[in-house]
Image (cartoon, rainbow, N blue to C red; front, top):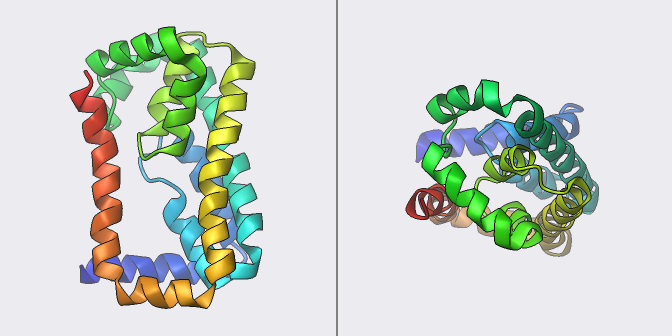
Amino acid sequence: MKSVRRLYDWVLSWAETPYGVPLLGLLAFAEASFFPVPPDVLLMALCLALPLKSYRFALVATLGSVTGGIAGYLIGWGLWGTLSPLFFEYIPGFSAEGFAHVKSWFDQYDFWTIFAAGFTPIPYKIFTIASGAFQINLPIFIGASLISRALRFFLVAALFYYLGRPARALIEKYFNLLTILFLGLLLGGFLLINFLK
């Protein structure tokens, strides 16, 4: 837990630099298309450090994530045939069986499948790339991504905007428990994908 606490303090220190906000946008972009770490950790750190700017941070995370989602869509649309072996072998959460199962969700509930992936701890990048590979209607994809990602990030921002410093005190008091809970949710998203194969 000490190493996680040091990582938390390190991430929190980014909020006090001019690089914190651009890094949040970059992390949100990368997570939506290929990177396994969600931007929520840095978003929360920035909101904790500067609660009055929470909504600005949420907007950066939303725009970065939706833009990254479009990049993921383009990967699926134009490069999936070439890149799929690399994704299946090296990117956590990707498998041929899971990908086929995702297609069945898209066939029935395209908007709601993308919305659920964007709002919950389910790995979003799987669904952005799958949307392109299965040629889901691009405006539906962008609309579902924008709504779900904005809801997710702005809910986090609202929590810290209204609770401010007390939220930081609460997180620091229950840091170990909250870390376990967050990692459990993240792991649960990956397990859900594997369970639904």
